[in-house]
Amino acid sequence: MKLSSKINLYLKSFGIFPDLFIKSLRGISFYIRNKHHLRKQIQKSDGSFLITNTYPCLADRFEHAGSVPLHYFHQDLFIANKIFQNNPVKHVDVGSRIDGFIAHVASFRKIEVLDLRDLKKNIYNVKFIKADLMDDNFTLQNYSDSLSCLHAIEHFGLGRYGDKVDLNGHLKGFEKLHSLLKNNGKFYFSTTIGPQRIEFDAHRVFSLKYLLKLFENKYEINSFSYINDKNIFFENAGLTQENINNNFFCHYGCGIFEMTKV
Image 1 (cartoon, helix red, strand yellow):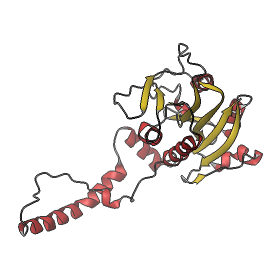
Image 2 (image 1 turned 60 degrees about the horizontal axis):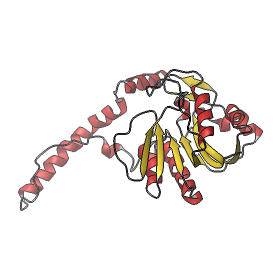
Image 3 (image 1 turned 90 degrees about the vertical axis):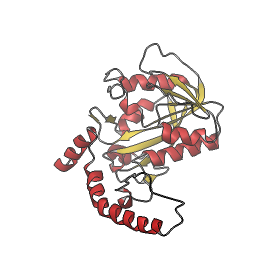
């Protein structure tokens, strides 16, 4: 990682966003000019709308029409559509984004959400259960015929979300996810892929070879898709030995699996 990228990363960790600051500085002249023009127009109007408060949005003019967050946008839409098509009896999710994937699914069906952290809002079609899958006291088994865990397992055991630090936290999580799902149930799973490592305390990155070993004798892989380092989505990619060995040339990509418990 370049030095400038490292500096930006650490500044953002403390809530300082250099890019946003620079864009906001650029936007000041536009703000002053536009406010001046609007005031002149108000003076000639019937006074239906007056400026009573200021709410500067200085950087918006320099942003794109809409954001496509790294990995999440593509995976959330893709898996939500899979669940819509498969129409399970009970779908349960562990740790996925509430404002992304969960919202997509809740728009057309009920969904149960398990997460280590509290969810204090009541959300339409969402039943929330606070649970730690690394805890030995979590014993829920054969609970659903459809299960998802998107971009979450890589955090298990790193302490980022208040969980206990455990090097093998992801392995404990995998075992509990497997127990949750009924035989022949569908498992929708995604995580970071690339050269295997921990980037503390953000996440692990898994090699495909490692992941496939974990799935052995537990799941049949129905489809594999991935998102590369440029945030480009590739559906139904071939898990050839070459692609497995080089992780589809991803350094920090996202692998998306649709599997059936065997």
